[in-house]
Structure formats: C-alpha cells, structure tokens
Length: 602
Image 1 (cartoon, rainbow, N blue to C red):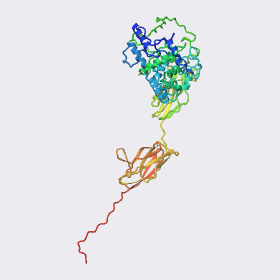
Image 2 (cartoon, rainbow, N blue to C red; image 1 turned 45 degrees about the vertical axis):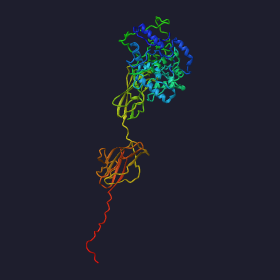
Image 3 (cartoon, rainbow, N blue to C red; image 1 turned 90 degrees about the vertical axis):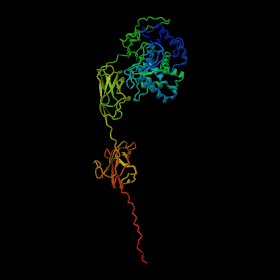
C-alpha cells in the first residue's frame, strides 16, 4: 500500500468535521498534481513529461520521508487563525527551518546566483529536498560549523529494495566497506559526492555531512546541464535526477510550494522530525535513511487532545475509506529484526580509545593557520581501527584559536582506517599553549589530548635602510623643514614591510649601532599629539613597499648641523644630517650726512 499522505492527527484529536475539512483542503491544496485524481493516476499522467535522467540518482534511490506539508499555509507563531488550533501549531512548526540549515540554503542560493546566474535556483527548492531527504538535518542537529552531530546514513544499497552499489569510498563517508549508503543531510551517495562535492563553509574540506557543503553541492547538481529551474520541465528533471520517482517528485514539489509561501527561522536542534512510519523507497523502508530511526522524536504535547506520551499510530485506511486491521508483521529476510543484524551491516566495533596520530605537537604563528590538522585514530582494545564513528574536537585553554566559522567544537567521522581529521585550525592573537580534546560522540572511550602552541609573530627584519632621495635637508631656526624625510627598508634586496623603526635626534654619531644613542636636548624636533616638542619616535613602521615618511620636523633657535638616527629592531641604522641656519642678517644702510648750517667758504 502506498505511504499515507498529509498530516498525522493524534488519536482522539480529529473529529469527523475536522477530517472532512482536512480532506477538502487536501484536494484543493496547491500541492503539485492535486486535481481530484487518484495518486497513481497523476503519476502515470506525468510520467511522459519528466523522463528519467541517464545517470544514477544522486541519493542512489534511497528511502525518503513522504510526509506532506500541513494543509494550512505557513506562518510565524501566532499569525495563523484560519484552521483549528492543532493544524495551526502543525503549520507553524513545519514552516520553521533550523537557523544554520536555513543559512546554508540561502548561502548556496547566493553562491550559485554568481557562478550560475542562468540557473535561477531558489533556496526553497533546497529546503524542500532537505526536508524530504533528512528532515532538515534531523531538525537542525548540527554544530556551529554546520556538521551533523551524528551521521545521517541511508539504507545499505545492496539491491534489497534499493539499487545495488558496491563500496566506492572505502567506508570513508558511510562506514561501510561492502556497499554504499547515501550520506548527510542532502543524502549523496559517495560516488556522486566524489564528483559534485563542494566546500560551502570555507574550511578547505568537502564534507557531505556538513549542511553548507551539502547544500552547495546539491545546488550545483540541480543546476547542471544548463538547467533553468524557473522552467517547469527543467525543474522536474532536476528533482527526478535526485531520486527518479514520481512519488518523490510530487513530495518535493509540495514542500517547495509550501516554503515559497513563507517560513521562519527556529533554533538549531528544534526542528520538526519526520514521521519514521512515512518513509518510501523499497523494502528497506525506515532504516536510518534521512535519520528517521537514529534521532529521537519529540514527545507529544500533553496539552493537545490525545497528547499522551505513548501515541497510538492511526490504522491505515482501506480503498473504500474504511479502516484496515493489519496482520501482525513478521520480519522478512530483507528486513531483519532489530535483534538480528544484517550480514551487510555488522554491529559497529566498540571504541576503547582515541589515539592522536601525525604531528606530536601543533604549532602556528599568531594570526596564521596551523600547518597540521588535529587527527586521531579510533581503536578497539586490541588496537584495531574502528570506522564510522563520530569524534568531537574541542579547543580548551586560554586561547583565541578557532576552527572555521569561529567554532570551538567540531565533529568528524572516522574513515575505513579509523582516522578522523579535524578542519583547519587558525591561531588567534593570544600566544601560549592550549589543548585540543578529542572524544567519541555518545560513547565512553579514552579521550585524546593534542597539544598546541601559538608563537608570537617574528619581528620583520631589514638589513638595509636608505634615503628615498638625496636632497639636502636645510631649514632656518624657529621654523620647519620644507622637505619630508623619506626612507626605504629592504631585506636581502627585497622591500621589507612592517619593519618597526625608531627615529631619534642624537648628540653625536660616535655610539655603536647596538648602543643606545644619547638624545639631543636642543635642535630639530618632532611634535607629539599635544603639540609638544619630542625628539624620539618609537611607533614608526614601514609600509607594504618598505617605505617610511617621517612626520614634519621643526627647529628651535639653535643653529648648526644635527643628526637624526633611524634604527630597526635588529640593529640596522641610518644617520641623516639636518642643517639649521641662522636667519640672514638684514643689510644696514650707511648714515646720511645732514646739511651744515655753517656758511661755505668762498
């Protein structure tokens, strides 16, 4: 029998009137394909319009969640009053998308708007696929970097109800070295991820269990082959390329239309989880595809009708509208009982300890990336590797070193060799030592501590200082030098940027470069920020081209030849002469003889 559609009302919550309203609304809803025809007939009619893609579906044809949107349009809490309270709460909850997941969808849309502007990818399409594939990363159970706390794995693709895909990744992504499984919040099979994987969060890695990476990769896949997703046929082909099922197409389009009408952000980890009874895709129904069985579902709200803590699933409806009484289910060979593990999916080995591998100690300079990444190996008590377990890296200690996205904790899954590597770690400005503590998520095992040290930046060096020009520097007393003093610093023949320089008016040039010169108390001077004379400057630094222009130099009433010494931190010096002259004396005119009153001799 086909999976049930629409909502799932709790026992005792729906009256005959509500059921009638629900069915009427469902028939008239905007969900694609609803026009009063039978579900299978709709799929048959549309089959010719959306031919199957030639390549393997992106999720390998795995199971997916068949929950359909609420009949009521989405709205923020308290804004919808048209339908009964239960429906209103359902619509409000379903319209909410966890913050980090929503951010990843929108960032993927923005990135593809630049790289593939003709694709017209709306983020709501990614949200619709993310809802169907994993319930929005299991309700937003992701860390600050966007990586899921525990792996989201589809059923084993061993040919029992699904495609048969033998292992292509050595278990690196799915922990299975025999067959492949769809991985992550957007459910990529490893072989497809190898082609379409993207780095959406800038950490230098392509991780299918990271919502930023997965959303960008899914968007790129949907935009392939020059598709314009604003064209209905292109849109349908893209969705069917994800999972070639008309049921899948209808479900995704229903959520697409729903999210286009409005949504809102909810805190990470508080999103609505899909109904585990509503998975479709083959005999492996349920499994852990999309995270349905591995994540606990929220308990019913006891304030709602029928909201006890042990809800009873409603029985399936028969074709004539009655209630079918199902016979007790007997596990088939293809669907083993929980107590009997499938031969293809052996019970995971127990992790006894984590062992740091690679560099014994991580080191970096302040403000730069660590050259090596933290890396551990999960081992059994016998020292054998354990694949497919999640480990968490946590930064501890007085440091501002961070993983990408300013995260202090990130999670990674061990590969077939039992190792897991953290993303790039960047040092902050705080120098000193700290620790990266690595633990197994959800299990008791000996943790691993990885030591890390941040060193101070080395002081930029210069082995030569030179004048920028050869002008004579002259000025009169009581004034200032018209020409600015410019210098160039170099190291091994190349411009030396960021070199600290001290400028001092000195008494004489007899002192060695390593000695502290005697500061002159007369002659040329600089001015401080209060306009007061100062004869030593210690805050100077060369620019990106190794150049430095000194502040304006003033003169007092002392004339003569003075010395300005420039010194770098490593002892390189340059001495510049400054000439101060007395003002020129004003010329004096000879006295004029006054006419005599004595009579002139005749």
